[in-house]
Length: 107
Image (cartoon, rainbow, N blue to C red; front, side):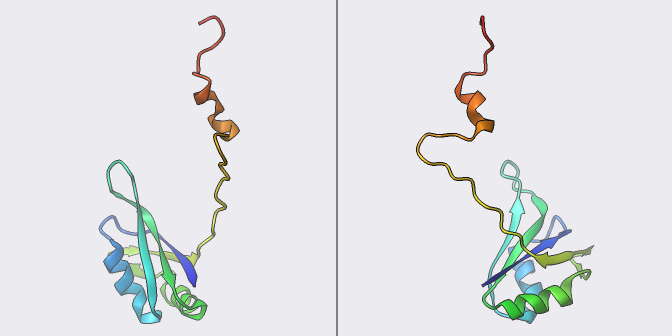
């Protein structure tokens, strides 16, 4: 399986149009347009998963810099970000202040 990043998407681009644009390069396993949780509006980028690495390579070569739904898109390999390890009730240091109540001394 190979996952590619697609940036510069038009607000109107959805998973179906993304799939149709990339299917000529190989069998697409999944498409995802990243959206704002509160509004559901596209954030202007998404991902396409192919079953085979060579199909993803062909798609990157063919589609990078092309136009989709009126916008020039950027296509490249997706970089997987490591997920934080939250075990038990330990919170990352950046979240500790919320647990403490957030009030200074003397309040």
